Image (tube, rainbow, N blue to C red):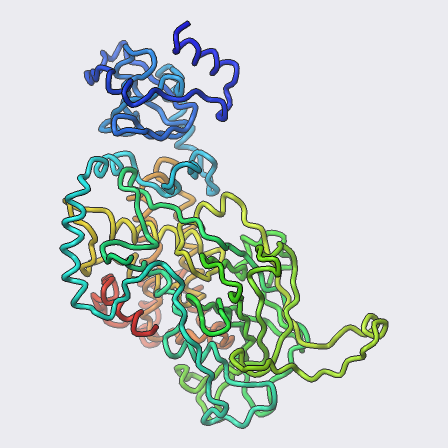
Length: 603
């Protein structure tokens, strides 16, 4: 019995993917005659992939389940020479046991079904990545893009990469280190703030706000890739040149959590004009901040702080306040630092100040360890975090003095009035991890921002790593609105959510074939960025101040009018109220070397 017949019997009796037959060896592939002449139109046949396959050699095609081919030659019963139906320029060999012959009418019907599908959640065909394959396949480019870089000589890449080292020497401040978390040492803020009255015990100027004023914890620094030890590549951003897709990065820690509420929070001292309340969140190693920081707005009812307008948190992905923490370090000191802040204004400040007369006052802080006592990850369940006064840098935590009964029955009847913060840890699904694994190794963000940030990293990898005409790293300044605008928009929560909504709306109307094209996805993100970009430069729009509820309400009114009316109509109807700032080309220019140098100066 021939090997081909044995394979066919196995395929018929056990059609599942786990028992599918193995392909031929490389030696057998090379022995097949390569006949690339197309068959006559009346004899042309088509095939559809019934499995996913990753070629072992350049002669073999990479394809996913559902891809359609035109059979060019099938003289060899085990390996067929085919041409992709959606890209006539890509040809190669496929194992015959991985495909099924279909009629031209069936091909047309399948093509129409694909064009009509309008689904946002990607299924296994769109977001497939093999455990044995290090490439990330979710936002991969088209077949033609993959073929361009398939046979690029490695020697040419190495020579061109070394040519960029001289350019690096011009910026001696850029760190060339492995991909390890960058720790920004925290400094305790001064106890006395000029222009404010003395604070009562337990209240201090915010430590994280003090760090943010000095440029620590910016998201743009976390999104920048880090150069490896050689300085010829990136340690945390790699691309599979054969497939033109960003490689997925598996980290040791991925935690999704929602801030539910804070109870029994002490009111701020008398005599302060309160503008709003929020919680500053950071990855903390007991010494400094790792990666970036977040701000989550709060709605207050007496001593109860709420962080979501939803009545239920059964679906955390839809909740704008569900955070994602990603880290790749096994350090038992790592924890999440929560600092409850009250945004107050100086007594004699003007209502429309630009933020110089505003200060964050900490009214409690707490830490949540990221590893359990036995060294494992934390369980997916709700947690209560005890809040302390002072700063997290104090040698001894300053507990709030709350008169409590010591007996068990007394505490059961009269619950504790000690300040505490409630959070919930969520389990991340496999479909969510596909995009999360495209993010940097260490980052803190909102779960709803992941699609935009994942697409941003894909564009970043294509811009910096994909060789253009045999060139290696492309570190020269370039006109790229996506790379220049996304980090700026993401620094302001309201604009980031507007960008997220714009991206989702534009992504939903894409057809399945367009969702597989890296060029189309990049253009979609560009359109979303340019739709939100004008809001950065309308002079009449108040400056973004984290936690300032009054300014947030005014900004929300601006954004609602802008979204419903449009920029030109909005400016035309209110020329005496709204003015647009002059355009500067630097706003849409991405310069990796300058950005990396600025990030190193902050560290």
